[in-house]
Image (cartoon, rainbow, N blue to C red; front, side):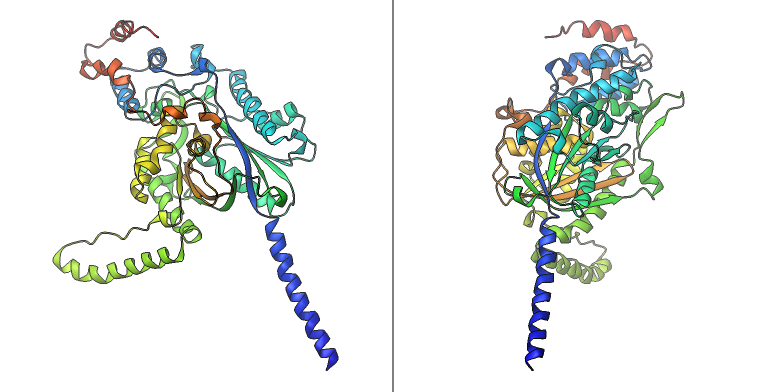
Amino acid sequence: MEFLSILYALSTLYFIFTLWKRYDEKRDQQCYILDYECHKPTDDRKLDTECSGEIIKRTKNLGLLEYQFLLKAIVSSGIGEQTYAPRIMFDSRESCPTLEDSITEMEEFFHDSIQKVLDKQGLSPSQIDVLVVNVSMFASVPSLASRIINHYKMREDIKVYNLSGMGCSASLISVGIVRSIFKTNKNIYALVVTSESLSPNWYTGNARSMILANCLFRSGGCAILLTNKRALKNEAMFKLNCLVRTHHGAKDESYGCCIQQEDEQGRLGFHLAKHLPKAATRAFVDNLREISPKILPIRELVRFMLASFLRKLRQSSSNKLGTTLPEPVINFKTGVDHFCIHTGGKAVIDGIGKSLGLTEHDLEPARMTLHRFGNTSASSLWYVLAYMEAKKRLKKGDTVLMISFGAGFKCNSCFLEVVRDLEDGNVWKDEIAMYPPKSLTNPFMEKFGWLQQEDPSTFKLENLLEITELYPRT
């Protein structure tokens, strides 16, 4: 009897030990964001209305109809006059870029943001265990990741990942890679570097679906420092609670809606199809369907299920009367405090806001980021997050839902928990007090609105040159 008691006690202790060990191992697998640094290019790279007009005038393959199309696009884009472009644009060489132009553009960002984020945390480059770099539309040999390793003299055993072609959702893919590595490696640091190279990607043709990209994308980038060190959990800014990736590449329509290709004259560009919003909506809905149960309270999920069930019951009788009942809407605000939305354009922000039932206060960070920095591709989410921090919105215990879209077609999202009160001015520190401005209207229509009244049969490029000379640069 005594032996059985001892055996029972040992079995109980072993069971408790196993549970504790699994719990302890899980704590070492957490993913914390220690810090991040958004790149702010120098003022000589600001792209105002005057400079934009000069660049468009240099694109000789455009006619009046293309000018009118671009004017309509930029006026309604939500982009202001403080955004940044690569240096090649100001040297009038966008139509003939060199390899060195692309590398210089990337290194200017790398050397600024990576050094700053390491200095803020008091780390040396040799302490970085994992490096993930994502730049979609430029791949060099050696890789951009190798250039960073060489410049900072990082360790020989560093785990390195260099991603390309992933589009505007690539930064969350990079974070997902780091999270996976953290599950099998304890007490390590990871550095995610996310940006886009614009220097080699200016489209010189006149296909409307491809010249649109020239209007929307701007220079930017972000370096993000992550760790799974338990001792640093209280010093971190955010804790990653979950990350969901949705890929519709198997659907031909989704695959082809956002793609790099050549036009009929063989000019390389980035094609944005008319059915892009439809593809984005499908991916967005599927992504929300998967992430909702992971981030929303049970009471909201139950309420939504009951509302959906009751609608089905009532719809049968409504069909006889020829009426359609409204779809029940899930309230994401029951589990999410802040929404960090990809700045793919005004229409993207409006669409997500409408789908999730968000207020202008919720959409303000994305709108202001689009106005100030434009669409900086995969790094845009971090400028939006920085706006929230600079506005002192992020308090301990708050939650943030990040939503991004990318070519493929992809919709990726992640759910962050704010670890401590955040109020650093970061990349917004010099101008956060001026945002939001009274008006987001850019001056393109004021300066170039006359193009809408021009007759294609009589219009000449000289007309554009003469009119713009009446507006000297200030």
